[in-house]
Image 1 (tube, rainbow, N blue to C red):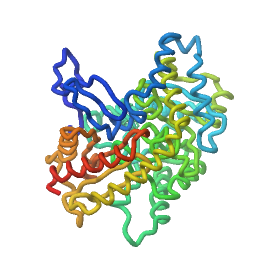
Image 2: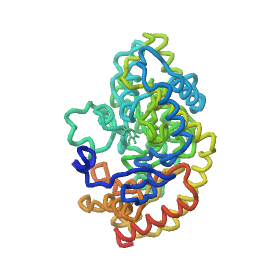
Image 3: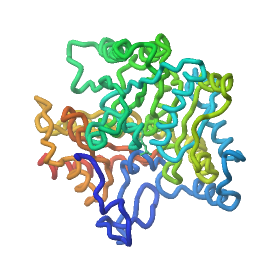
Image 4: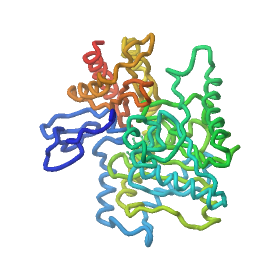
Length: 449
Ligand code: PMP
């Protein structure tokens, strides 16, 4: 298996791990038990968007602990769950209408719930033939079996392939390796989006339940936005064929790309949206599935029931923490900081690393950026997988006190090693400069410049 977590890292018992023990967080730094500070340039996997000790979030969580932790969702709703749903629905991309929000505990659970909701939508309308899911590769939608089947991440799928349901995958936009210099961005966007229509025809238009895509790809390819016009055409194709569009904003949502939802920048709305990491910013585990008005109406006019449930959904402490996170992002005008610091980060990466012999591509949006490394800039050849380059970069950066998210290519050796950066929305200009300086030192040391 080319992808995984070392056994000693998450199979816990009595500190058998060879990892440092983290004991606290100060602003955008993590502190280990030897007192060492690490500048967090990735928030784990784009999670910690408000640093590690935001006072308002901590206060909100403490207040909720003193009020109520848990009551079963089959019997009660709670105030923070309702307030957070109002907050989210009022800020959804135009076209969402009067939607509803379901809370889960992780991005994978949210994706499972989104897929089941899409199936329910069609059944409620009397259409039982629609069972097929079309997704993209590369992509990552989670590690539970339904989400894993939906994702186009070869390494993570491989050991479980016989257990996975049949999902078809079209190529996701990846201009660095797909778009020739003779093709305009408009033509490229249309060519890639039209792959969906061809696949819908191949599956039989009346059989397709949903199309699933990350508006900005994260964990599989490194941060990859779609070309202008791609998602508008996707929306058109889904509407023409009665296919629901599920936008996986687990990683790119809640401000990461400079707008609350990444899809806002594409001028369209999804039928079902999932989001997680920036929702709770790591202060509590929480994810959400947001159903647009058409989905809500189909259920309200049908059975009136949700055919999905988990014990810990709508947890009051998690929703109270997430509501505080969202109020801080808005109240402190942090989306503007994401845009400003994002512009600074892009410029600094291009200026500092753009000419490096092993830096092939620099791509991203907002405070969500990726540096792709190649063995040869002319041929774009990747490093051999056995070099474990991304892992070595991550380890070298950590030794310098910088946390980055390194990942190896995930689609049958097509894409190469990359380093993903997702700094906190509270990052200062000095911290952004420091991230780029330390990353440059790391790449110099690991690739020899
Ligand atoms: N979707 C996307 C786009 C993700 O990036 C991830 C996690 N990296 C998931 C789903 C799964 O989320 P989780 O790890 O919380 O289950």
